[in-house]
Length: 65
Image 1 (cartoon, rainbow, N blue to C red):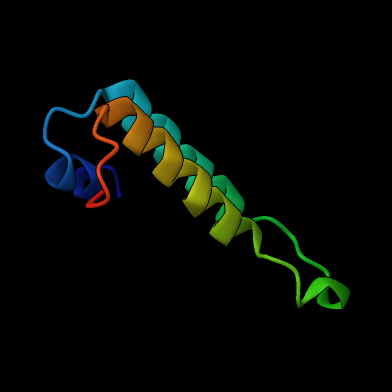
Image 2: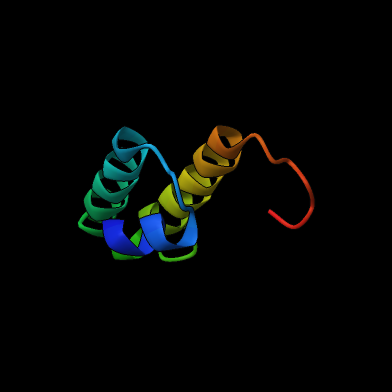
């Protein structure tokens, strides 16, 4: 997954890409009870958070990001 991030964002700092991959991997293994099926999944929340981190790191806050 890190290679995909690097391909999409050339020059992305390795620390940020490693953190992003680790955070998404952790979230993908998070347990969610069936009672919370309507709640946002940990992976969806992690993806939103990582997106915000990557946009912030890029410094490009245009609507295309």
